[in-house]
Length: 133
Image (cartoon, rainbow, N blue to C red; front, side):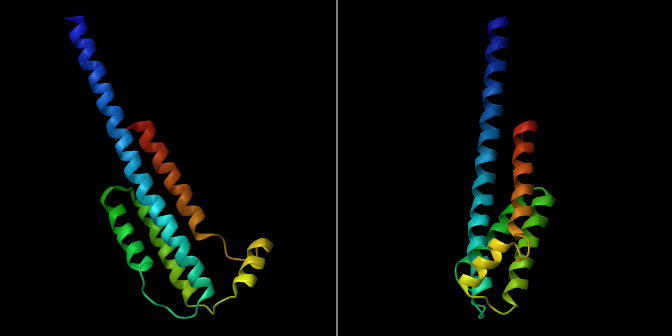
């Protein structure tokens, strides 16, 4: 009887760990895709005057909507803040890439809009790992 209880406990523990690993992988993939797409759009927003909808813009909105299915409100709010920053930067006059690099090195650029989002995501992933799904 004790070995049966031990086997059930072991199996439940394995199942729980697999669920947590799956949830972490899903969230990491969506968060990483968002960061990559947003990074591309930020660079375009700084260096181009025209606003054109290509692949990254709709993809970014789609990723935010996917986050709404599983992510806590803080993560979704952070993603929406990144979107707002991209739009605000897009509405400003463009900057040459060389000038953008100089401003980044001298820290005269606005703070990186992805920094806060990344920190929120890291906290969410740590929370999932600590508390489970």
